[in-house]
Length: 382
Length: 130
Image 1 (cartoon, rainbow over the protein chains, first blue to last red):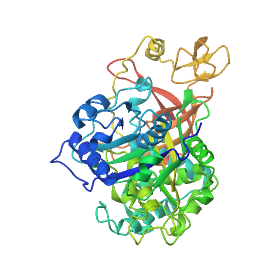
Image 2: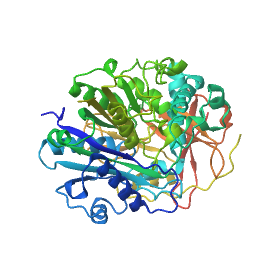
Image 3: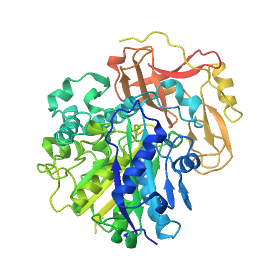
Image 4: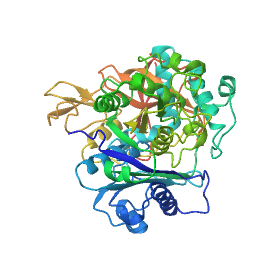
């Protein structure tokens, strides 16, 4: 059995806010749900499946009650920032199996307003918590080893931020709209070697939501048709300390699974949404997904190759997490939303990829340098 | 740059890992080895994460290791610190801090050895350049 072509993304919504001290987190979930339902041209009563992750206050039962939903399928898989890419795959499975016909996926939260609640400790806690792993240094450790093994440079990483900033200038909602140069990135303060401040994504309040449905229902609605044709998911961790390798991510496994199911290759992709928590995240994912060979990501991203209309692989044309939005410190949702905009032809004209009929949305969750998940979705204009 | 002496949280401990912390109090650094597949692992589990046998035994590590990677975390309320992974002579790699050193001079591949730092409970293992 395959999910290829069995589920369509009929509704998308990205909250325009980047700072929401005057709203509750549950309220933001409701606002993005409303936005996506209206984008699809549906009503709340149509929703019969609901997906949310650890950012949903009280969990899936409480959110269903708060939103006033009446659903027959639930999924609260939490793999950090890539949860929503996994939700999209799982929603397609549920739709293909007849468990629901119109699924809602929401993400929302306010890390810019205040600190996020701590996560429950894992079995490793006594053996790791004291060492102060944070997002910054966990990705810094990956970058340090990647530079050691492959000669990747800070200049090459900086090109990723430069490309994102070129796109963000056209996004009125982007948190950082100023176009930056390689020198700007290199001159920004060192946060956790070798990552500079501009190698890091923004911290924003906000959220986003999706409506996923059957081919029949999608075709009865008014929006351009976008369908999921391949999905993969995987996790990676130190695994008892054996064969530690921080230059690869779980994308090495989620990517090929998705491409195989879709029956396409990285060469066919017209637009890529790639999770950009840090510049190194993008570089490693580009390699792991097969857009270039391992170790050649630095050369691949340099000289504007990720800039729409300039390079070979236009990426994150909304400005991505590096410049536009990283709601709840979880970038997977906005990756899907911009890929759908591209496939619909609804991206900003300055960054819209011509004849964009095939896109990938890919993300990681957790900490790349510690333990993480990855998920890859191949999306097609139908 | 040198970091000031820092207060580290005491391990909570549990029945599965208690022998590790008991040994740490004696200044011994233990790893686990599976007697079924022969593979060592860290952090310690009762069931081997490779072959899933329950025939795992405690083994004292040499405490000798090399730096696999590190990052000098500069943005920290408690002062800068060097987080990293080291690979033990016995094989397993583990997350730690590289301490008691000039952090600006750390290098991947550098030799380090285990050193324990006190907490309000059992001491915690760290690594320092040889």
